[in-house]
Image 1 (cartoon, one colour):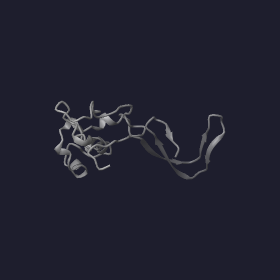
Image 2 (cartoon, one colour; image 1 turned 180 degrees about the horizontal axis):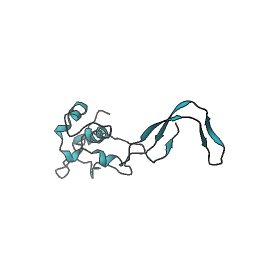
Image 3 (cartoon, helix red, strand yellow; image 1 turned 180 degrees about the vertical axis):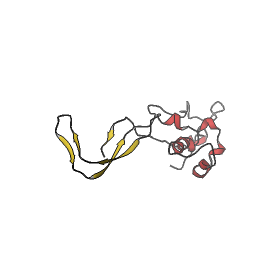
Image 4 (cartoon, one colour; image 1 turned 90 degrees about the vertical axis):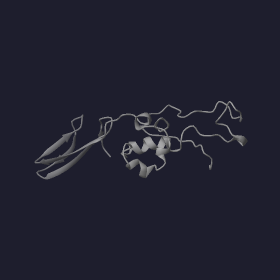
Length: 141
């Protein structure tokens, strides 16, 4: 739509969900007691379009304390900080995934819980890439 307001839906495991952000208007009728309602059903937004993107940019690693955010969201300085959601408001605090490489020289046998061999290798140098996901589980993909 070409209007001022918009709807954003955030999905994913790291999203701090279950919340409706922003303010829903209590009345859509233009009046002196309702400063956000204009004629013909137009509403003045209470939060900028950049509000959700600010915290998302921070989650992606953009430094919001320096000039880097100005390249991503050039209008962010036009809004008070309390109108821009921060990363901690939008996303759960999760440990970054860890990855390690292990070099093995010699014979190796990795057994499954039932005792059957899962990996058997001879006297070769092999490289294993083990990645641990955010829940501390081995990522097999």
